[in-house]
Length: 503
Ligand code: ADP
Ligand code: GLC
Image: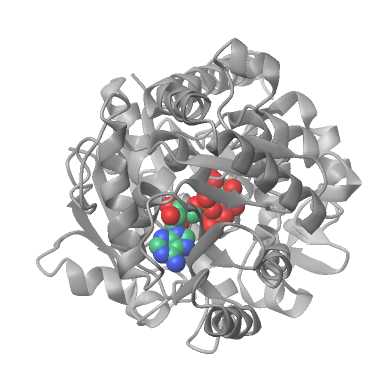
């Protein structure tokens, strides 16, 4: 079975800002169950070191251009035997807070240096030069923070191949040319067919140009990024690489997100004990200081307060819901203006709107279990995990018809109700009018308890397990390795015959 090095800038429960952490904390476990020898490599951020005090140092080395020693500290992913290699270089990573931005919400000024260093260390591990006595067959990189790795590996003929997963093309790791000159990267990489992107250094191009294969986290998003609307100017490159590009939808970590066993919620329940879900609703209304009423339709949102998530649409909607029999509870952090506006709206309409600023894993579980509807009007969504958690928790998603949302939620129509496939409400235009229409459709079905129950149960039965997606990843790894070994074999044969001829 293949030896895989899984490179990521976040992984739950070590550090999490979004869905990448959920993926990195669960997919490797599912792959290990399929017999992969998989190790995760992650920066040793300050908050990680604080939580895991007695970490073993398993390697120490210097890198050209860095002043201090780099240490590889080892631990294991919770509830599994997946090894985690933490890249410990305090000057780059041992700072408190968010891995990417400072306390004012600005990117750390040395992000290019920090993640270039991370990539160089991954390169050393990939080449078995970090003294770990373990040489991976394939490097699986995720998002821009590890995207230089495929570019660095392609400079070395004997290096292992790589897979690059795009979790979000909107984040590319763009820096000025002057930064490229300071990173000590091969000068040949400064070219439009390499890391240069309109005069800037683009980390993500390292993955898009040089990885043996590329995938995104849903089939629909793999198509969307090949269009000008969602390709950010990279659509030409992605079209060019379309034969190497595919989509594999994310799954759910069953050990963390299961209403039957979830320890963070007030009352456990299943699809056959749905009346117990109401206990979570009442507890949530109390917690959120909303009028406690089991009959009112309770909507919710959890997420990063950024444009991607359609927060502006939610804000517009919330300004005009007084005549609707609904309540809304929100949890999120991000853009300060969005935070202020949402707090203001909640103050103006405390009977219907309640907003919690902050990041809370516990509250996220309580919301998923307590609400009736999860609203996800994302302008784009590579996969999205909250609609999957919602389905699992018997919470009906209302989603915009894009990316992973389009791939995972089935709209409620007379036909899908009849054939038991309806799982949510899908709208086509990212507008407040379209959201309202969906809410009205939801209110109508909510007033027919039998049909509503059917909808909820269909969603709870939908299969979004990591087991299924991990099999697709394993298949992709095997294809990459097969192609790589064939190529390597012919290079070796060529080399041998050239030797015989006497070159
Ligand atoms: P993205 O990765 O684009 O942020 P996803 O839907 O893939 O979106 O994943 C977001 C993950 O982060 C989910 O697990 C969600 O519950 C979690 N999350 C986002 N914001 C918060 C928050 N403020 N508190 C708790 N969990 C949050
Ligand atoms: C990104 C995307 C999100 C996806 C997550 C995990 O952050 O925005 O849609 O679910 O990565 O793949």
